[in-house]
Length: 270
Picture 1: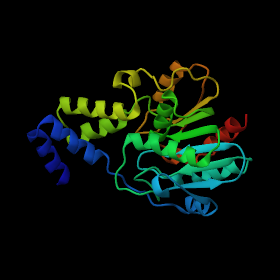
Picture 2 (picture 1 turned 30 degrees about the vertical axis):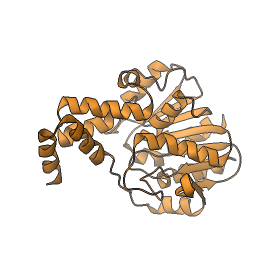
Picture 3 (picture 1 turned 45 degrees about the vertical axis):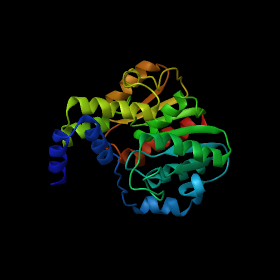
């Protein structure tokens, strides 16, 4: 019923108002429940506060070189927690953050710009150089946008189910709301502004160009949100990057895959 009303409203309002409605609906977030493995990993972590008035939450395991893990849209740090705990056991300080509107951080909505700005606020609080950045889906794309903008720098980058550009939310909006093409174009421009590049540049792989063998790309062949062919596309921008493909996990369960844990352990410690 709500979607039907939104579709009708989009067709009756000027582009500027339609854009505001699309952005409002798309920015709403959900908080997935924790399973027992995630809960156990979080319970072994130290809670950290970051951001304005220490309002946001991150989780830390271990001591040593810093490995920062960034969850995806509608994800949470707990999804990265088992990986973070395992990495910490290898002699690293693994930190996973809850982005605005996710997990234990405040807000019922988020924006692409929060995925960039929250990382920067956390890093300022940590006061430590980054050994490895690990991102999942939108979190991976946003961390690469921050790298492209010169806001963050790491010795290594691992991207799990990373889209080459932010097409998944556009596809969802088209499927659920069917807005006019002009509204889609305005929404693309809004996302591009938040990520710091034009839509055309993002499509051309701007965030990933110039990277080398110290980059690991991981995709699942049964992912229905970000196709594993995105890995092949990104490999074309950085031929020396490592590419791993799994099967049977999909977009989120890939974070629990033994192959992924083993690959990340070797990559971080190489």
